[in-house]
Picture 1 (cartoon, rainbow, N blue to C red):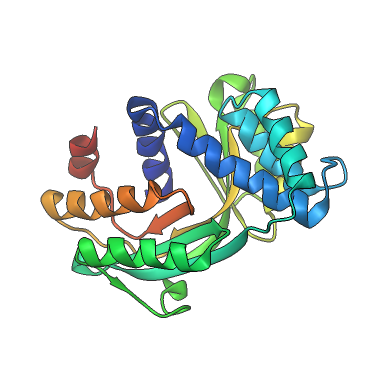
Picture 2: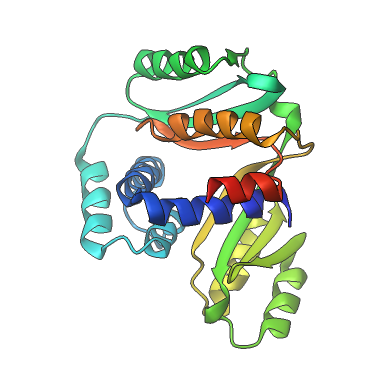
Length: 247
């Protein structure tokens, strides 16, 4: 199993156990707000908004919440800024953080504080980008697929690079260029994805002993708990021992 699908599965389970639904909703609301400000409130004419709404439905966000987020963004003059940070956790694990914020100084201070407190270091912008490949990842509940062989052939034909099934979910990986095409093919098949997004996939994993890995993951979790943080990527190898210790 590749690192990103294993990490996604673990986060899915932890999210249910830790009742982090409100954090997930907050992240998607920000995605909706940015999409509306960039392309308008009509999902038919705004692909980014259509994608954000699809992700909202994938986590069972109520329709009223989605409509409120669209209406608020359409009326609200304030702007959310996309900001990224790069750094190292202890033992040289690379960390890439994506944020949406209306207060850059607040976000910088929060991110730097976690790095310092947890024994990591904040690096200069662009210094770690080479360690991650930008890929599209589409997650589909296998129960929504009636003919798995036909489904796999369809998404491969559309440009999927890799496909895994784990814990009842398909994880379809695409190049950044083919992401939209593969996502549309899934939609055309009448299948609603659980999630579809561009991610930063590590091209080289770093393996640590279980205790050291858990300390790094505690740092990752602290970043993810910040309201300004949308996504946190890392190149820690989630071994079977680490995965078991997390559950």
